[in-house]
Image (tube, rainbow, N blue to C red; front, side):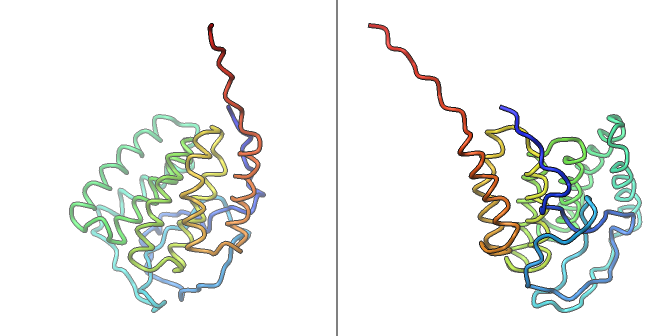
Amino acid sequence: MRLPVQHDDDPMLPWGTVTADFWATTHQQDDTTDQSAPPVPSEPAVREPVADGGADESVPPPPQPYQQRIAAVTAAFSTAQDSEALAAAEAEAQLLDQEITAQYGPAHPYTINIRELRGWLAHVKGQHGVATRWYLHTAGLQGSALGPRHRMTRESAHRAAHTWNSITDYEEALGLSSELLDVLAASSGEGSAAFRSVLARVRKLRAGRPKEPTRRTVS
């Protein structure tokens, strides 16, 4: 069963814009207050995490060749209709993920950042379930490194909610909803607009769930 897609005026937009300044080293103070639905563009900002507790600490950029390759991947975000460019960007992002993970480890900010980009790339390609899984994954990494209420954790969770709202497959949307609600509850709270919006959609999905056909028994 196919579902209607949530539109960009819904209160689940991610925060910021992806640019070539992916490895920018200026950070904001951590803010643990809930900001569930800021009026922002539709692409996520990908920034290095700040230190636990909100200290303003810079993460140095990786070697220049990595920066150039990342910029090439982000350039594909504006070519949503070019399947060849998106496929090339996806292959390059996967290779970058493998190389960066091998060099820096799975919990390093560089690794988390490239996986955030892989999530948005999947979203651009229309693979919204894949994108949601990537953002749930990065939210988990951010939560383990920085804490569940850290700004970076919350932003990853919001991006997971945004991409989940675009899922049109009924079973896939419901299948991801429990984990998504758990992540939003931990990062934003059950009283946040983010959590309430997802919960409302889940309830609508469950209420409209098609019933299993009754099987006839042959006597």
